[in-house]
Image (cartoon, rainbow, N blue to C red; front, side, top):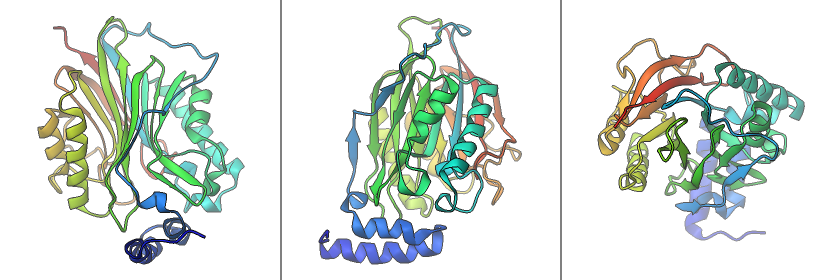
Length: 312
């Protein structure tokens, strides 16, 4: 049996109370906190996160200088159900197959995922990202594990049809009593532009506290600010544009652009009607199209954008 430091025992007790109040099935999550020290460690960086699926070709023959991207919170494969622990493996496979059909229809070059599970006790014991990548013909994927414990592994992910390099996963500093969040980062080539690449990020910020989100944004800015490539940052920010300064801090810190940030018809989280999922881009990448999809494949809505790289 694992013996915890007194500070971790206090954290585990608080986490148990919060998880039961705030997360469906929270007792399962909190049990992982109390039993597994990995859930309280951080920040962590891992570079062993790039995976390739044999037999799937890369596609670099798209319109020159354009990238179509998508972001979606996978919700651990439960679709918009109450909790993944209450669903069978076959139900989760069916849910992820529906996600795959949406991706096939929209044909993005790059997909960012959040709440993306590796083999986990509560969600069917299989790699959700690899499953979706194989179903949709993405040769390369990155899966970061920001929460590990009680046979549960999940975090953020990227999938690419056009290849990727320099992949890494970064877990933010601990934010008790909520569980860890983080991001994955990779460099993606731009079709039809030899030698030109974009840094792409899939990020998930804390859901409970604005101050924690601001701190996490600063960690993200510190990681990216010295990198020379144009940037695309996609994910579940758990923040609205006018409700707090989190998004503005990120946009200002990395000189990014948001698509119609004050638009009132871009809600991505139907439960409260808020726009929590965003695609942010460097000024060298111009938005040609931006859509929040109506598909119900998660408790969040998918977001798709088409961007063009400005000529030098």
